[in-house]
Every structure is written in structure tokens, then in C-alpha cells.
Image (cartoon, rainbow, N blue to C red; front, top):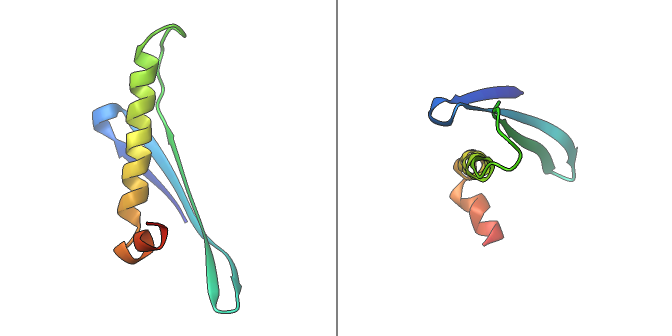
Length: 77
């Protein structure tokens, strides 16, 4: 499944790919890929690049952590 989410506040888009990769021994392997992007016209020396990257990382992390259950998060804590 492919899903596209637009976050207007930062003028960015996330493309999420979710799929079943493999099933073996009652274990389900799931592909969960999040890509975020934003079109900008900035000078390479601009400090705004870092601000944009921080916002994109926050956007990606927000999607990732809100997609997991407490049980799943507990496995990695």
C-alpha cells in the first residue's frame, strides 16, 4: 500500500509504503518505509537548510511513532 500525506504547515509531503514482505513460522515481516520531501530554492550556504531538515525529520518521526502500538514500542525500550 502506498499512502501520501501532505503537511501544509511546512509545505512537505510524506510517502509511506507498507507491505507484507514474508511470512515464516507464524512470523509476519512488514515493510514500513517513510520518505519525506519538500521543494525549496535555497542557497547551499543558507542556515535555512538545517531548519528545513529538522522539520522534515520531525514530520517523519511523528508518522513513525504514531504508527506503532504501545506493545510494539515496549519491545524496543
